[in-house]
Length: 218
Image (tube, rainbow, N blue to C red; front, side, top):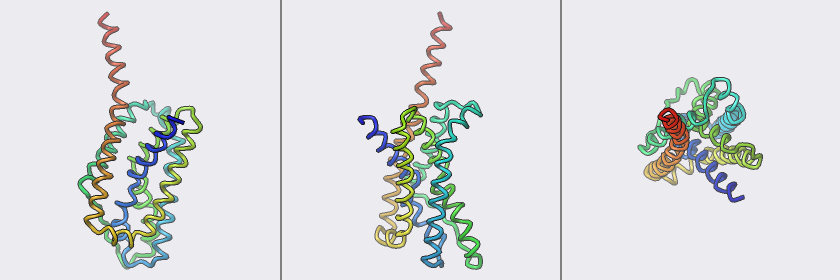
């Protein structure tokens, strides 16, 4: 139980920050400008379901991918840390990627944007995938921790669904300054998580290198 609670908090904070529904709101509103509330609801539902399914697939298939390509968990932690740090740095700068909506292609575009770019890579990008695989590796053989991870992913995307559904009101309430402050705080938190991830992968590798150096010296 002492291990489970910190693990659950790590899962929730890191996944929520990487999914970044608050930062996605202004982009989502820009992309769906001119659409009805029903069309927006359809896009949000499809995007969150897509992101959830993709992340769950990588959570369970991640270890097989490692084995197939001969990738070590520690190496992936380092790479994942770099990716997550870059995402956090961009968030710290409050950078948004605006996509202009073509009014003549609203119907076709509505089907497309719910999968890409909203579902992938905005709500489920390389940072979220890398983080989820590392968290699954941390769970080891503990089914309780695996259950916490799956439950956290489901909770985050359910929360994301409701946040994006209420995006019009939330963006208006927070204002541009509020959105920028929120994004910068989340970016800073993400950079800290990324450093921990990077160091956690680097330490065992450096330890092995030092041990090999000592043995060779003898």
